[in-house]
Image (cartoon, rainbow, N blue to C red; front, top):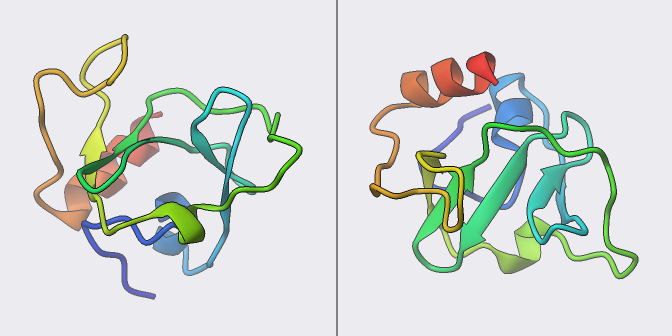
Length: 105
């Protein structure tokens, strides 16, 4: 299964493993993988920042899924501990960078 450097609303970690797994909005307003707990802070139309800490499955009652919200934002690493979590702004330049980053969290 191919993974792009642009977020398609599905869990990038699961895509790397050949699975399509939804990401849902959690109570912290991050998109979280239903399978892995991987979280994305979305800056609509710009960045999908993969956070360096996992969620706990505490999803919002009204289901909002990433596939409905994404606009092909570029996958980016977390570079700061405070919102917007990507300052200085950086983005992944290769799928290998995405794999290495996700493996480390």
